[in-house]
Length: 115
Image 1: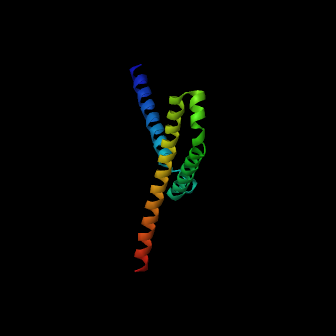
Image 2: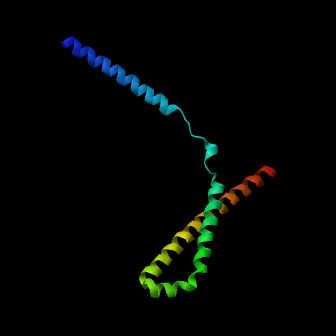
Image 3: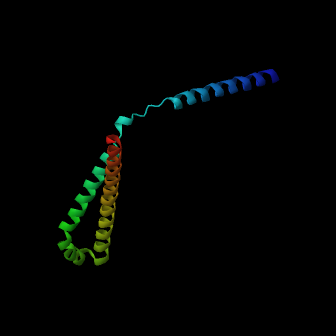
């Protein structure tokens, strides 16, 4: 019986080693497609456009805030408006900053190529 338990342990450890090797081989396979993700430029353009659209929508309804405040409560309406403006402004600024940084690096790369 002792031999059988020892054999079982060795067989189990070998199968565990094989399984972990198979998992390691699968982990080494890189199925990530870099072309399937958005480029930093397209992310920045999308963020800037969406942020700008949200800001324009907020400024379009700014005249209705007083009426909404009377209907739904001052704190709720102005807190929601502040949150809306914060998110849209941050999204717009993040996208604009990324666009500016990308354009600056492309300009400096192009200048170096012409020399």
